[in-house]
Length: 362
Image: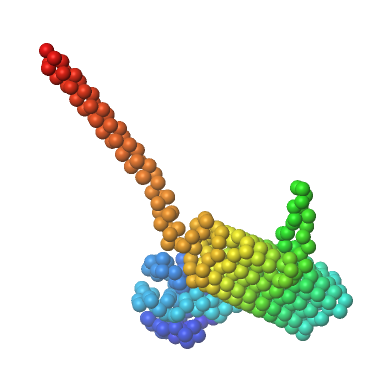
């Protein structure tokens, strides 16, 4: 496929700086790009690579005024580049169609139009699956669960009983939705299981990564709001509520009954205790340990998590500890010298005092 820079700018609603007739034949990352490719820069720390890339053109933010190559200035370079990927490198994966003869389908199951169920999947009694949803091999869907239209459920996903999933939801391999919440009552050293009889509700346009676990509620529901994106290896405990358009990054753990607001970002390996609230648009930095509620529109980091600017100051002080230790050692040595000098002076003065007394007596 060949397109001029002018044609591409029209597709991504961008502004050209340079030759609009530059021919583009491919798309690639800025380090790997060659002549004929278009690439992009979304992060300012990579701007220096514009002087090194072999790409014929670069998609940038509108803050970039000029470059050694022709550029297309856009509001969102990452989104614009995603459109170019779809144009130059369309997805050639063809999802399965129809019902495979080895699929096991229970009683009173309701299947929408053009549903695909692939080999060795198990659909239990009274499940409902909406139009155009694709179920890959070895998927398990429990009794009374409902899955909306245009969903994509990859292999080895387990969706337990009475779970509700909206439209256009994508669930990657190995994820378990609706597993029992971790609830036990300990009596005389013995742990007695507390029944988890609630459900999980996942709204429209949610994407869930591989090997995620979302526990069912003890009572009521565990809830994932529409448009939320969940990375791989995330644990979401019973009765957690996550608002719309939040981002939960890999290896995050959220304890039970915590409420996450809208537009929240939980960065990688962050941990959140139970029964607290994280406000709308808050950001929890990577590896932060959140032990108390976080107000809306704030950023916290560290352990225990605290306002990010304070955490940076504390970290800066910690980084200076070796220098501080050397300074304290130096001051201690000088103080010892001063103490020794003072002790010497006192001894000398005492000696002089004894001598004078002896002279007066004589």
